[in-house]
Image (cartoon, rainbow, N blue to C red):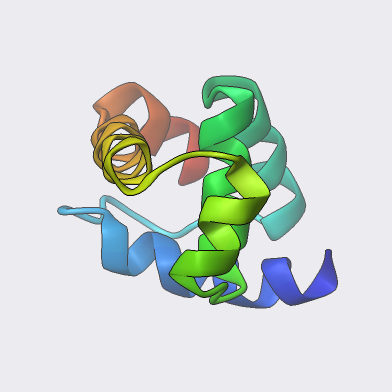
Length: 90
């Protein structure tokens, strides 16, 4: 869990189009993501934050390439919604 926290802010900066302020604490951001993303999306994002290989992600999420791409697009879209950004940033 600690490893995820270290990379969370970095990963969010890469995935969000417009950063509108400073990020809240990692614990608060994890709670917001857990609440706002589906279980699969949250699991995907956790794996992405710890730089898991694509093969391991496919195995861990029990899905195929196409579903993984859909999950990624869906998650990135959600992360870029203003409502979610406001919850992640103070």
